[in-house]
Amino acid sequence: MGSLSLVKPNIHLVNLKERTMLFHVPTSGLFELDNMGRDVIDLFSNEGEVTATMIKDNLAGRYAAGELSELLEDLKSMQVIHDSTGVAAYNPEPKKIENFPLTTVVLNVNTGCNLSCTYCYKEDLTTPSAGLKMEVDTAIQSVEMLLKESPDQKQYNVVFFGGEPLSNMPLIREVVAYCERRFADLEARVDFTMTTNATLLNEELVDWFNEHRFGLTISMDGPKAMHDKNRITVGGQGTYDVVKKKVDMLLSRYTARPVGCRVTLTKGITDVETIFNHLYHDLGFAEVGFGPVTSGDIAEFNLSGEEMEKVFEGQKVLGRKYLEAALQNKNFGFGNMHQLMTDLHEGTKKQLPCGAGVGLLAVDKEGGLNLCHRFTGSDQPLFGDVEKGIDKPALASFIEERLDRTGKGCETCRIRNICSGGCYHESYAKYGDPAIPSYHYCDLLRDWVDFGVEIYSQIMLENPGFFDAYVSPRRGA
Ligand code: SF4
Ligand code: SF4
Image (cartoon, rainbow, N blue to C red; front, side):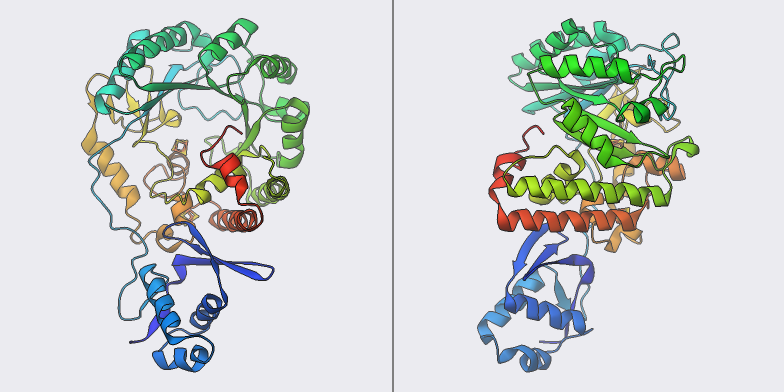
């Protein structure tokens, strides 16, 4: 054996009381180290290069030679250690993208919104009167494009987005009727989802959504003072009172699926615990998730570095409550933590940050294909249209650029297979180029994922049944 060394970017160790867990970065797998494993990793951590003599001197007296060499072989095959002369493969080889397994189409049904939230990022957002509604034909063509580009799938998703999607219900009703017939004929399932500000909801609509089993997410920012700071009408009035009334009605009436809430955190609003308590405990949403704004078009709404630290601190408080509940085999509807637990549990190895451009495309009012809903109306080039289909060479070259981590900061990052360089739209907003990773609060993000690995390890060791009950397959909130 020549000398060996540790491939630091491929592991992350978590110490829990007496136990040590090894988070294996290439697979996002988690392993408990026994005494021998711990001693071997300690030796490699303390020495730049480890020789056969060093292993013999340090470990041979304590462990059987056969077991030691078996462990070293295992660690080599996992790329945790490597021959110092060789090159460790931290990342998969960049590959050619030829297939786009599209299963989700996002329809931008109206560029208009009946509210005028001060921080709204939408590129093509207009007021209700100036809103441009998608034609039903364009929506139907989008569904046909989805089927043509990606036939023979078992499950498809149609997402209604805006502006405010409830302001184009005639189109939504027609599209739902069309899809239910069309996909039933193909013996495929179709799922409908929508994010709405809730202000236009009424009982008849809620019953209709129930009938069609919509996945609903409500945009709401917390208790009255926080919500009304930014989520206002075109005339400048806070919308909390009306939204709360609608949410009460929705949550008491809607039975098809759990209803989630999406909170946008902006400058000056960092108290995630208070916001969560109100939305989860007082109002009764099944799950509450936070989206911090860090690189919006309107710089004055972006959270500062210090504010982001506060947000992550608050998320950790909620994360500990999530752990407490999980150890009692109960679910706690903190969406950000639940998503991280799901990623870790499924051993998610994300080469890309999200499905945008691969499994999902967003259609704008004119039928143009965009990476996702946040790009509709932007000055980014389109990737085809619903008539001609996907511009595959253009989309492939974009995705391939993001897949190739060579020479980028993400190449050796320990959370590279969970973060994968971050949201394309954030990169676009920050650097004007969605292909560059959004090196945004990387240290905070790494700290958050480390925290998640600790929580995951603890649940795994003390109540592994939690994952079967609530995480895999993911069940509601
Ligand atoms: S963007 Fe930052 S945190 Fe994310 S993978 Fe790249 S280096 Fe890591
Ligand atoms: S690019 Fe960003 S906003 Fe668009 S789907 Fe991906 S993570 Fe979401």
